[in-house]
Amino acid sequence: MDNLSQLRTMGNILAQNWWIILWRGIAALIFGLITWFNPVITLYVMVIFFGGYAFVDGVLGIIMAIRGRHYHHKWWLLLIWALANLLTGILTFFWPLITMVVLTEIIAIWAIISGLLQIFTAIGLRKAIQGEGWIVLGGILSILLGIVLIINPFEGGIALTWALGIYATVFGIITVVLAFWVRRHAKKGY
View 1 (spheres, rainbow, N blue to C red):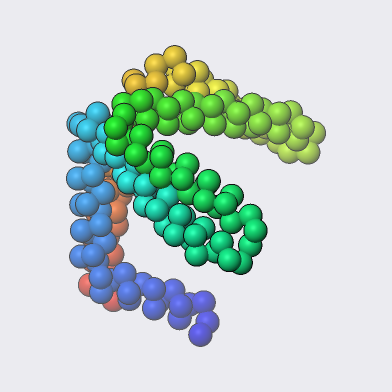
View 2 (spheres, one colour; view 1 turned 45 degrees about the vertical axis):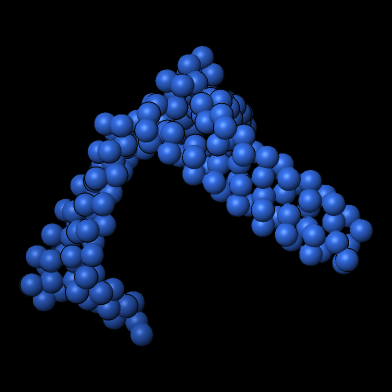
């Protein structure tokens, strides 16, 4: 099948399922608006889901470690790892606010390190590429984000949910527009 045939096939799939694209866009839009107007609840739910994940991962890791104890003499390393995950999940359920702050701080540290690495990379590549200033700007913005999150972790967490809400809302709008565009062009015989 040549490229043009593949494009037409993909176009047909989109055209026949334009309504699925529409519902995906509506779902993203609803998620984005809920996230935007209820950032504290969104952040709390994300922390609880993280706690649930860590708990389940811990339980499954314990099972894997115990089942593997006959096959490797350092099976206990897997057990310690799994117990740490289990404990993290339990602590998250008991102290979700502390977990929220800690997760925000981890994101802050990541943003600062990432920003510094971006700047160092841009400096190292300044003779090999053009436009390295944009990389530096991205690095500076990452560092500023990290500093803001460290200074105000709770407010920073709220701001992160707002950013997620904005993204989901814009993505939802674009997807809804895409759905109607695909539907209109399908009628024209795409």
